[in-house]
Image (tube, rainbow, N blue to C red; front, top):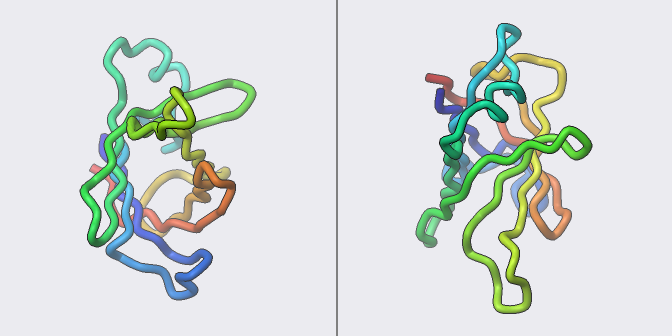
Length: 120
């Protein structure tokens, strides 16, 4: 299933920006939340893309850690680090459905609110 997120608010974007998006492939459990058991059982990486104006899309994959939750590794590691930076996302207790919100923390620690605009 692909979950589409659009920037709802954050530093520099108090009114959000539909041009800043994430497309995340996830399996959802019966409650409509990301399914950790399905992620662990799936040998195929769950893909993700970050889309922003004037830059090519960044591609990565979804990761899950029982201690730290959900994140996306993007493959554009910088010269100072051999590791792919992680973007963390937290859906909260609600199902991922259009109109719900997801908190996203970029690798630099800056947090943003994203609204789910599509699930399919």
